[in-house]
Amino acid sequence: MNNHNGVGDDPTSYAYDGFRIKKWNKDNLGYGEAWSTGDVIGTLIDFDRKVISFWRNNKNLGKAFTNIKIGQNCVYFPAVSMKNG
Image (cartoon, rainbow, N blue to C red; front, side):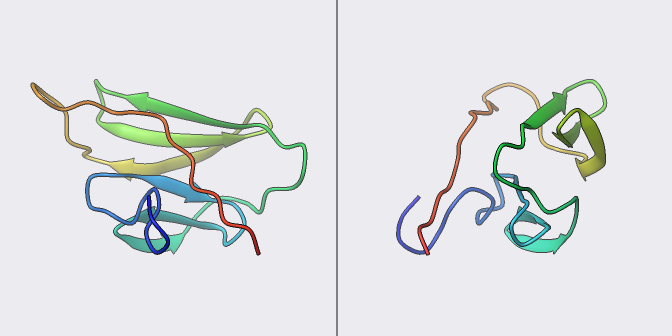
């Protein structure tokens, strides 16, 4: 992350932005619900089905990304991008 790029701004990273109600993987598309203070956001990576899904307060928001890359030398790390203002 730097002053211009965050999680999801690269083809090898995936993000859900509840402020803008979009999913990000280099480009962005509408997805999910707006989040609020106190919400709990969850993420599931299903390596068998090659799918990433997100939850908001125990509600499944559906598949966000499909056919994700898996295999040798492919790892995923949890991350958060934050911006003030």
